[in-house]
Length: 57
Image (cartoon, rainbow, N blue to C red; front, side, top):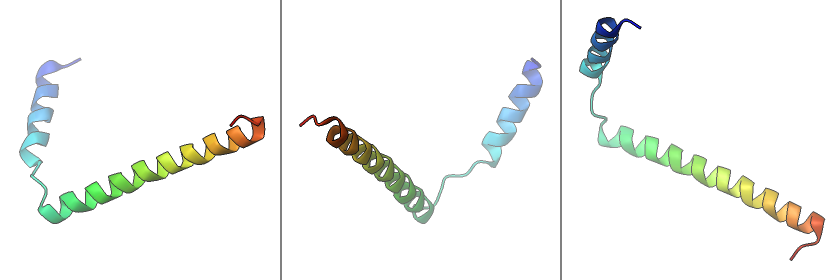
């Protein structure tokens, strides 16, 4: 592991990074929220199907 090389590459990435605009942030937040809701809904469906198949209420 070449520590000086790694540090310079990390510094280069941080210098290129910029703060997102409000529109960019809102778009990312909406996509992340939609993904969370989708995964939760799929989990709910699987849980409901399993409950119905096993007869547990």
